[in-house]
Length: 244
Image 1 (cartoon, rainbow, N blue to C red):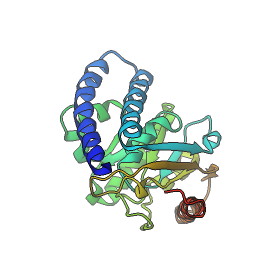
Image 2 (cartoon, one colour):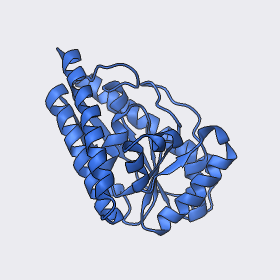
Image 3 (tube, one colour):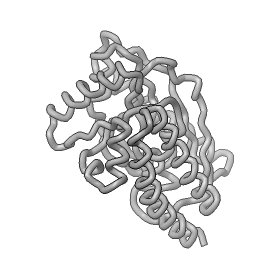
């Protein structure tokens, strides 16, 4: 039954995303940037509401008070498609660093462009890093935070990889705070496969890290260690309590 409900949700996800994207692109012609982000929150609530209703998969956030009142860089764990939607409901409005191919998608990609996302060619190395730093500083100056998935791709549960330098470098150049965000979404909505498991995704927002004058490798090491340790704590607590 859970697989069938997951299939129904997937149909809802794709159909509603396409229809909402058409409406969103049209609405963006008259809406300021804050109004556009308000519409993305409506979209995210509808999708995650459908996920909870059909698949019994919900989420909780701890540490939201750690988000600074000023623009900052957020470094999120990347383990599933969930966080690409859930991030709209966690924390302030933010520009998303993403692969440029997404921007080319009709309506959906055009909508992402209207959110001042930063599309990059991940194969271009230093050029991509420079683009993130340059465009990211402009977003920060304009009052938007910047969200980066430093692993660069979705990782299987329990796995990680070397962090890219662009997020930490942007923070050091801009002299802003870095906020790490951990979650266990990958254990419920895996990067491959149709099944969405029942349960509650735990999202934990870490304390801000001052990047001023620090080495980017030190920042990445601190963020990565905290995120992976926090995910391990989440899973250990659920195992001890016999929670899926």
